[in-house]
Image (tube, rainbow, N blue to C red):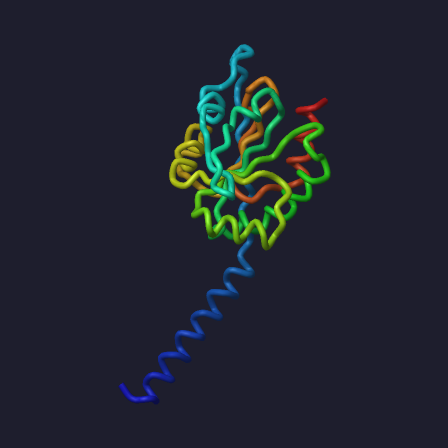
Length: 186
């Protein structure tokens, strides 16, 4: 191939890249799908029991028992560094967790990602809540909460009683989340 052909291919590739970026910028984001769970007569949901039975590594590689969050209102966010809506919502989720400081609820993140990518990301964005490395096992955990497609981000609101109050598939709408958190503690 000569230099003229190579330059033409590069120009066409760049044009498609720009067109793809413009489509992505102008694309309207779908509303997150939410699911409310039926009460289980005061018993924790099975998926909650499975969550609290887990021990996952933190970003320093130390195993952490998720049972430490049992008995407290908890927001569990399943995410990945390669997931654009996850990355977009995390700064606001981190600010929300930082505002509350665990007084009314706690936030944890379970990454479906490599420990090194998660650590680099968390350091860069200064995430204010604990992050745990779930890997592909994290996808299975989220499926237990009704995330049958394994989509991300996927967030689960759990009451102090172990009841799943609501799940959110897609980028969080923070007005809705704040209203749900107020009901949880009201």
